[in-house]
Image (tube, rainbow over all chains, first blue to last red; front, side):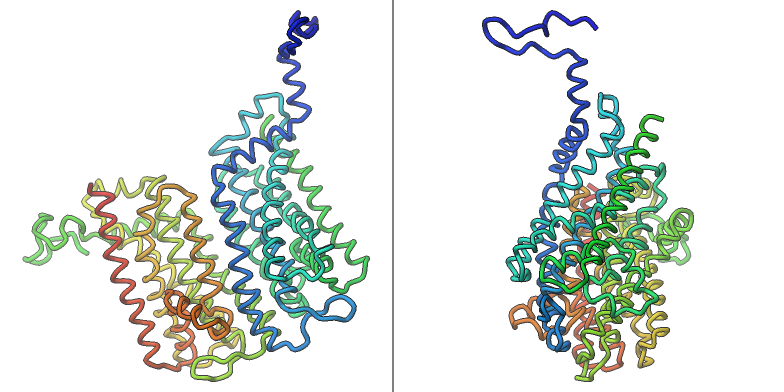
Length: 294
Length: 277
């Protein structure tokens, strides 16, 4: 392609940059496509910033007050043994609960942002079609969604972690802060396969209500969130084993107060979270491409 | 509720009837339409709604129960933790169902589906619409309460025949919340405002002596909780579930009777302002 005169050099006297050709802007947008889309995603989130802030601040406060202090009175008085911590020590119920609550918050935000938001992008608000008509690739739109989601997840889990510090629920702050990221992993491990699923839906026939009721709710309740998983009979304990929430919570507990478990187990938790996130991302990008290019 | 001029005192001219401008005496048309719409589209979602409190009961009753042991229930008797939280979860489910139906659901029909505009261009009045919607919410609530009580029975958590009274009592609780819900919804303009409703319900759910006795709180906090409707619902159902009644039980019931009366009045006033301007 022959160069246009305008792009040959900077203006000799003023040193101004010559305007980019359409091809050059396109190439630039293409290079950072996912970030362009994530930027838009986050700015759109400002439309409901009060909701975001309210859930990020109000939810931790209510859960920590209700379960972390209220219920804790009952549990710490009744179970004299406490919960096993590092080096044979025991920790209180509040400390035990903390990492589970952070991971739960990530799961909830992720289930919200990967259902109606995605379907709306294709069906009602059609937010994907504008960017798709630009040099951004369909896969980059999916990745941009994931980046935006990760931003909101980190915001939520970060605020939650600060509340835990405020309530004195993190005995090892040196490693404890990493639970912000293990919680993020829970949100991605659950959310990205859901994203891939949502991208295939053409009609809202209550699938999301079913996901909420039969997947999110059981994962929340049977993932060793409010009590050790071993307290449940085997018939329902397996729900915890397959739940990203449980794996993330256990990681958080190791980081927060040195919950005793073999190193291999910790590695397994990590692998269990990374695998579905990676598969979900690949499938999500593929499904976005099929839907938008088809 | 009949549109037919069956008695000599009923007039077909609205202004001759009590509340004639608000009430077309045909609530059943709204109810029939609601039932038909539910059956046609989302009955499976509707029916499965009762699963949620059951999941809570299994997880918390068994898992958390192992940590808690026994708790002091109504009348000072020690009771198992699952027995303790089951009636509370039923009260919560009555609240959630009623609030969901009278806010989210009504908001959508009001602002997006524009369903009520269609209804009100027929001889139906706003009071027919309100009563029809509330009746549907209560029907759903009664269905869930029956299912949940059956599960409680299957799990061996029912120790007194009085426990059957939990079903009508849960409907009373749902009525209290539903009658307020529509009045609140009439003020809402955006979907995001619905999140504020959740932000009121979540603390009520977690703090209203649902999972632990009120005595763990300091005095001042206790009085705040005792002013909230859910606490009265939880306590009422808990007393009914073991069949131990006191003047307190009557007090809780009275709280809801007043709530229903105030809520219905507020809803009617708001619907008139909304539709008949």
